[in-house]
Image 1 (cartoon, helix red, strand yellow):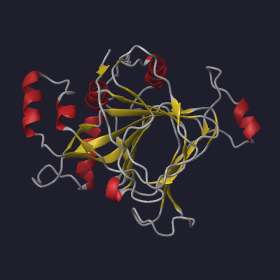
Image 2 (cartoon, one colour):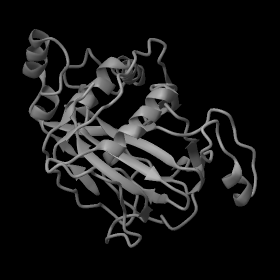
Image 3 (cartoon, one colour):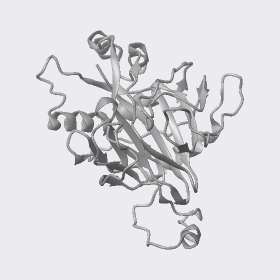
Amino acid sequence: MMPTAQSKNTKKNKSGGKTTSNGAATGKQATETAVGWPSLKPKPKLKAETIIPSQIMTMKELLTEEECKRVIRALDHLRAADGNILQFETTSRTPKRGEAFRYNDRISIHDPLFADTLWAKTGLKTSCEAWLREQGSHRDDDPQAARCWGLNPNLRFYRYRVGHKFEKHFDESVQISKSDLSSSSSSSSSSSSAIQSEMPETLWTEYTLLIYLTGSKDPIQKSTKEEAESQTGADGEPLLRGGETVFYNTPIRSQKRLTQEHSVAASVSPVAGLALIHRHGSECLLHEAREVIAGAKYVLRSDLVFG
């Protein structure tokens, strides 16, 4: 499968406080790329597991380990419209005013076709819609309730190497163009036209989607940093240690007393193929990506779009 990422200019939202982040594209962004993404298999047994009701859920094996490896390999072949190879850019270790400390590598591309493949072909769409109905936050029988229409085509790829982390922050909601989603539909022309006619003009993101592309299913024994760096997988690469996504018990989006310690509400360890979906915008929980101790953490980031 060779989707083409189209040209897209994305503006960055202003942060709402000293620890606020957002889902807008930053870092290196492909203006036009032809990417050899792997074909993704349907996952008929995919099931959402609730971590915190209406807030956080996970899905095991959204991608297979081989699919994860192929996605990572495809990142080495991203090319801009001028033919130059796109590479990861490292974020500044001096955050801008109003942003959390963030130290990792990033690439951002606009690829509606691959976003739609992730959503429609893997089983993600069916599982997400079922989970949202169970939570009661987006009911099909409520005409006033917002509907989930798919994934943000602005795909961000993060690489966290040893020492990289993203300190406590909130994820912002961003507005999405209707044309971005309607142009990405892989369904038949008749059903695609029906979807476009039903889709409202005003769309926004409401949940963050993180798909971990690295991480072992088997628990790693506690060890010193030197011992951790020497532990390798079957491919000879150091096993990932650290890099957990941790959520905190603190008033949602509160900017008060953020320097104080807060108890952990949930912690998710990276496992290749695992999807983590959590609420953002005005309902976002304070969270962080903890420091990577060994290995490398690769993450695919998108958002669930509503309207």
